[in-house]
Amino acid sequence: MDYITLAATGNLRVAFGIVLFIVLILFIGVVLKFAGVWVRAYMSGARVSLWQLVGMSLRRIPPSLIVDARISLIKAGLSVTVNNMESHYLAGGDVINVARALIAADKANIALSFERAQAIDLAGRDVEEAVRTSVQPKVINCPGESQSETGMLDAVAKDGIRLLVKARVTVRANLERLVGGAGEETIIARVGQGIVSAIGSAPSYKDVLENPDKISQKVLNSGLDSQTGFEIVSIDIADISVAGVSAVSNVGAQLETERAEADKKMRQAEAEGRRAMAVAYEQEMRAKVQEMRARVQEMQAKVTEAKAEVPKAIAEAFRNGSIGVMDYYRLNNIKSDTSMRQSIAGNDEESDNK
Image (cartoon, rainbow, N blue to C red):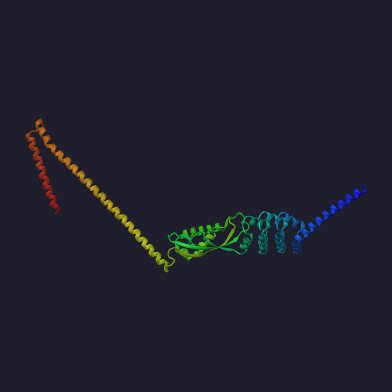
């Protein structure tokens, strides 16, 4: 029994020694693997335990990435926990970019928390570029290259003159509205719409050419940056010209010539319209004359027909005994007397006219 007990005890010691050796080998392997990262973090004041490094490795998080970001933040006087950085990496964010953005915002005295920087980065925006744009405003062209083939806005003043305008918009990133706010395309579209509207309300193209700053100031005061991730600092008219006469030295004379030519064509068109109306009216009057002549001929035919009935009526009256021969003679005398008086009256009127 003593021999068996000693053998069992010896086997336990051997097994325990093997396990202890394996643990020691694993510990040495872990130390050798993470020694450089741990020492770098310890010497930089951004202490990270070996267990945290092992946990990062098991979660497939590059320990050196988290440690480098933490060292940068600690050296800049900022403090972000390792768990926060790990969670941001696991969410698909760029830890180094967020760390650089936090450092840049802190040096520029811009209030930016890790949670907001994390949200901006996870929203698909470049948080470092956003901080840089907030510190140093960015200039964008209006219209954009993809919005206009000529690279100019086309606007028309109240006097009908087309103007080609190009503007430069200076914007600053608004970190508070960057998440969920509209981007540069919306700013360009709104500014372009505002410039076209402002020029359209101008009485004359000369007013726009004389004071282009009024147009830009009017557009700037319209609050075009609402619900966007940017704040408009200034809107400057970079180029403005009259459409179609860019190569003419005397724009005013050219426009007056074109306007006179247009007025001449308009007057000619109006005269042609009046002539056509006169011709139509003349044709209408001729048609009415022909109609009246036809009516006169119709009336004359009816009169002739009626005269033809008179002898018949007289003959019928003789047969019926309604009138006698003496009555017929008296009727003829009356007709002759009436004709004579009409003849005399006609001669008097001709002599009076003479």
